[in-house]
Image 1 (cartoon, rainbow, N blue to C red):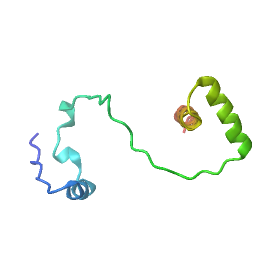
Image 2: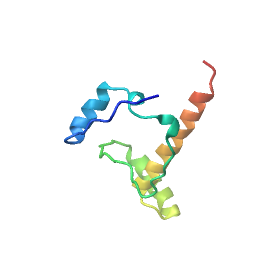
Image 3: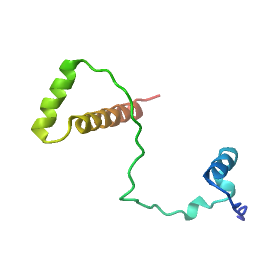
Length: 95
């Protein structure tokens, strides 16, 4: 199947706008795609303000100290684990 040629873009904003309006399958043969791993790619982060009870922060700091990691890093680990767990349960439930 012939695919449409990809247009040239002046910048990322122009490309982003293009892909928001077009289906990539018209331009890319995804059957020929190969999986790629980017081992040094770090996910984007966003700073948030989160109010927690002081007792929760204190307990988190104790746990983090036992593991020799910063408490904020431990909090991110706990959140990621819980999200993964909830996602597995959500996918396992019959519709």
